[in-house]
Length: 314
Image (cartoon, rainbow, N blue to C red; front, side, top):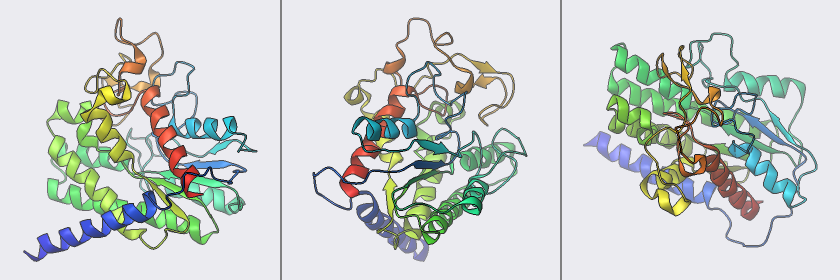
């Protein structure tokens, strides 16, 4: 009974945090903030290198790039996007989701940035993390080396770890931090394939809960981007976002290795181009590029959502 009461209390606190961090401000007046730079830290979800985890078809295919495009189109960005994000990286642990021990964790990305400079008054800091940690945890559950209960507990603690990184940035002087929690991995094609929708949904929720409760006092400097809310809408009412398919990956680019952390011989969107799509499929009609990561249209709509939240807030 006590455990249930504590969980309900945490959820109430998390909801209060969502109100404070995601919905703070109700003005429809365009913000006067003209960011010098957008500075991004994170994993595959924010990675903007040569092989992005989406469809690599020369379109804007990442939410951070879409956000930048909005600011530039409005004449409100003097600089560009400086991205430290790397594919498959975890918050603070090695190896990454693909088994690479030399990648730079989100924590290490931030440390490298702060070792060289401090956030400027007009910078917008973007940070995400946790997806790769959930992938690694689920792999351990499937291998029998981690119990489902411990997996969920670890997810909550990892949400708190992301909150610690947000706090480090704020303490270093970052005035505008946008943090994206994980989206609901229980809604992904991967979750359905392995029959773990419920467990992955629970772990994703607990991650975001841990994050939100731990940043509850940072509302002045932090905006929470509720990626889980938006992806839930993508998958529950896809037609509302001009999607026809929210269950099948559009890419056919199979990776012989463990390229996205869900096992060998699986579709890896980092290898996906316009030439490796399902025959006759329209890329903007699909939510998922591979079994975990999203298509360019899904990223662009999320980036627009982030821009709208930022414009109201700052």
